[in-house]
Image (cartoon, rainbow, N blue to C red; front, side, top):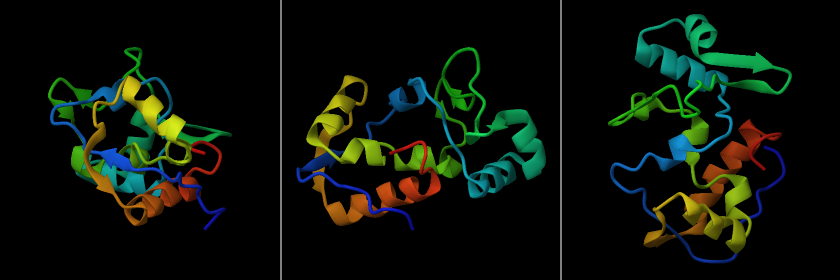
Length: 144
């Protein structure tokens, strides 16, 4: 485990909104772990190596999903994520990435595109911290 993630001292309200796919449409990289590759490949009925060849890019920065020319995730379909039950860690953890939970300002900035921020019950820090820490540990150079 790397450095402990800083969690802001404010009320975290979040409830993913039915039918919303705004997080999937945001620009940026979707970093993936070897476990993500295995899990998604199995879901798609592929070998991990074939999945990686077809859907990923790997370079000195790490392994990530290839971004199609549409700028949204290749797995985003009109009715939502086609791999939702096995989506990558980075997607499962959103919006509780280390960069989002460290300050009230960063958390509130998510409202620009995420209608779930500020909705629902207040979530305990004990629920948020392990998710943010898992991301920080898996992607120390990307989600901090």
